[in-house]
Image (cartoon, rainbow, N blue to C red; front, side, top):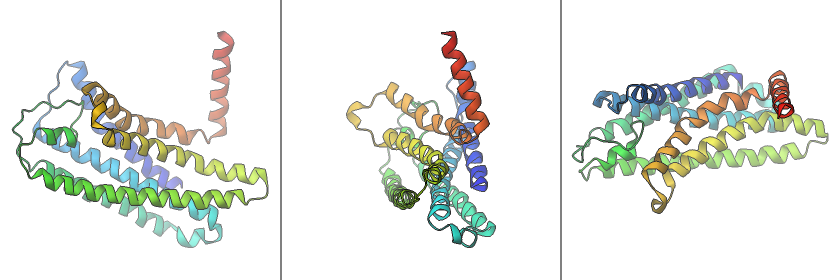
Length: 254
């Protein structure tokens, strides 16, 4: 789990660094400019880290499933070599996924201006500027991506159903609490990541507006990677005790 947490931390760091520094630079210098090459690089790295994170979260779900449902086989199924191979597969899949999307998107002719209604380069906003029917290729890629994402989602749901069934069969309440405490941070991170991204891309067009689209983009591109370290850190007893002391002091002052 700690090996996968290291990889997850790297994706979160890359996720944040892809969009936030440029947005802060533009805000401080009162500009909205980005070069064509910079926009392409931003799209590539954003989708690279986002897809790699999703694949890593799926692998981490399998790690939790094996550790709770098949603990005696953990060393065999998830040895150091197997973990390294799965992490490498997640990064490689993310690289291929982002490369296909970036190459396809920036091969389209853009003739509807050059102004994006976002604080970073986002594929749906770029497709709006295209006047070519070849964006059907992008729709095909999005359909494949949706199937892949849905497959990972089904795997996560099925794994957690098996995990909860196994935990509820544990006779002691202390054992159940310990098992749940190892799964709840991962489940919270997965729920936050999937819910924000899904709502941003699949929201009804009737409620779409520039301000709402901007707010949702911040929600799914900044909030999950910023909160992930905090969610996993809450397993640390010393950190939780410090947080409770801080909250109690604030309440007493008020």
